[in-house]
Image (cartoon, rainbow, N blue to C red; front, side, top):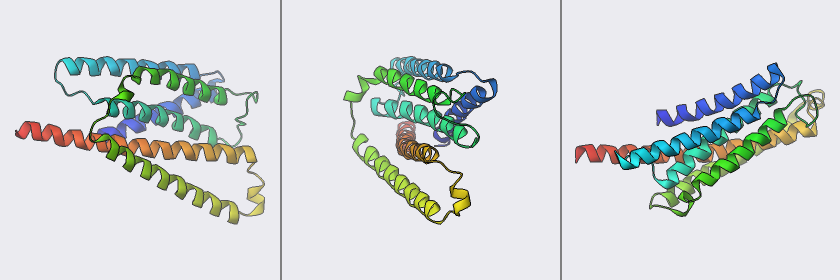
Length: 207
């Protein structure tokens, strides 16, 4: 379980680092994140293939997909958060920075890398339905909680502070909230698979 959380934190930190480099070095870094994501995906699939032929401890197809989406979503979230915590930066296209283009570049890489899991998407096991349902439930709860908090902030924020927040900023905050709810959904599923796998290994050792 600790490894799963560390995995997500590292992915988010990489996304944040890519954004920071783009801001301070003033050049597009989305392609770096895209290549890194695709490279890690290819490496992981090769590693799982080796485990399948040796130890038999490779993650099942549903878990592989969740690991991929967890890493990709976490990296995108880290990238978005850096853009949001720099209020002086305009995230619009053509505003003098490449953060928006970088985000779309990494999303394109995520879509491209997802094709590597096309075969896995057709395979399900007995755990997948329950784990998926629990993850989706958590994602909805997080999204509703975010909307309630944002509604309260918008309703009670002093006018002089509200004037500093543009509709574009609110739009980006809402998008970040959606990405975070998806991340929580993926994290829940990732932790569930990790816990289940740990139990299976212990049973195998005891048996």
